[in-house]
Image 1 (cartoon, helix red, strand yellow):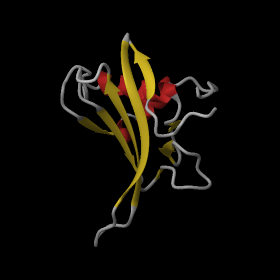
Image 2 (spheres, one colour):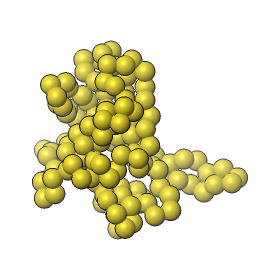
Image 3 (cartoon, helix red, strand yellow):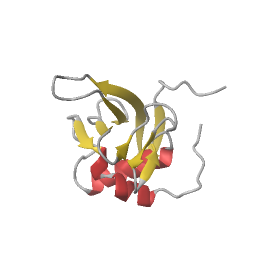
Image 4 (cartoon, one colour):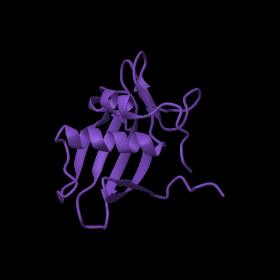
Length: 137
């Protein structure tokens, strides 16, 4: 039976458990900007209340791609001529978590929500993900 796409997934990194979700959303167009697709990977430290969530946001822009339908796959983000990740893969989530922690952008025990621009973490995370590893259900 396939996994429900809205159900949080469990990830264990360095002995600490997280629940993570991936959501696609659109920034509502304003007078000075068009509609903007974005992918948000959110990691919640477990048990609940032990730390604030980490939200890693990938917003579309020049030279970048986020899934907005065909021909891109769900969860694919990247630079047109550079690094890319599939955010449905647990290895990509782990690599982004590690990159955010290494840069000091987020500490798992802090109780506040932290929002990070995913593009600032992309190259480091993509380099850390082993290629050819299939996604886990």
